[in-house]
Image 1 (cartoon, rainbow, N blue to C red):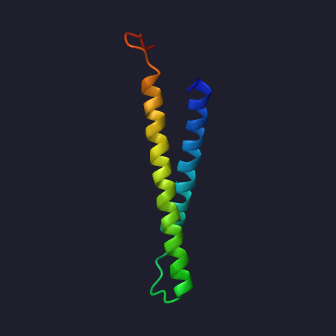
Image 2: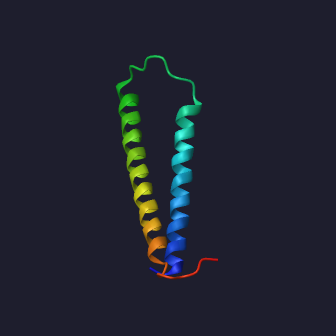
Length: 81
């Protein structure tokens, strides 16, 4: 992977993190709903939770991949500035 690939991956990671953060904030910023009995609404919330979990997994994977690329870029004996 070249340096431009790593930069692109970093941009994607930051963008995904911001999206997940915004969704998380939207869920926590609202006051709690008392008792929801609408099955369609409950199904939609469950679907959104599933999608959010998938996005978080993808973000974690991208972060691990980016960290591995950064560590692999360094040569032994290289002097850091």
